[in-house]
Image 1 (cartoon, rainbow, N blue to C red):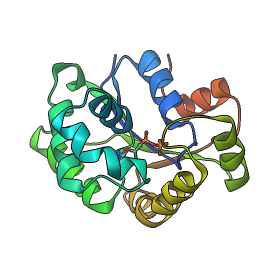
Image 2: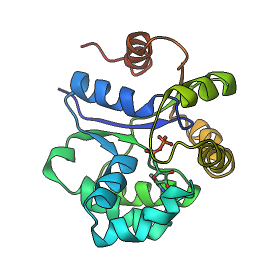
Image 3: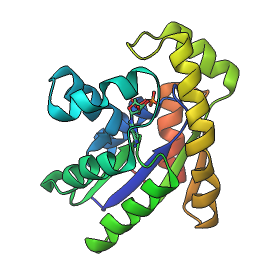
Length: 188
Ligand code: ADP
């Protein structure tokens, strides 16, 4: 299968994680979720987990330097050599730059950035149906605010670079996956 390096962008609750897993299965590259990696570190009570637990609990972003280490290590693993679906990274403009540098150092670049668009009303409806330790109402509001402030600017940035593809995330899980494969012009 062709190499494929994809970033998924979307608000908390947009379905990035679900789609990352589904796409990974279809495209034969790993789904890399920084949120999952950090939650695993917290669950395992590792030094990284201890450092990020409180930050995640209030819905803030883990600092860029810590995230660079996490992502650099993960992208260096052999299964990511032929591609990946990144879910939850980059989340700041500084992280965009770091990712570009890490890829460039390996002679690689992104193929596309897929934005999964979901209305605020639908995000709130989903949040109420979903239960996770960091999904309390106040924390969710904080995460949405952080997304708007820090991550939304990435949409225009990747748009300017011609990498952005937008899909309607309010449809069924299957339809969203098919739409993403469609905008990636992938036949599987
Ligand atoms: P969601 O997809 O619901 O927005 P994630 O599972 O991706 O949430 O991330 C959960 C938490 O992990 C974030 O709120 C943040 O604290 C931390 N995190 C994950 N990825 C990053 C990142 N790239 N930079 C900073 N913090 C991150």
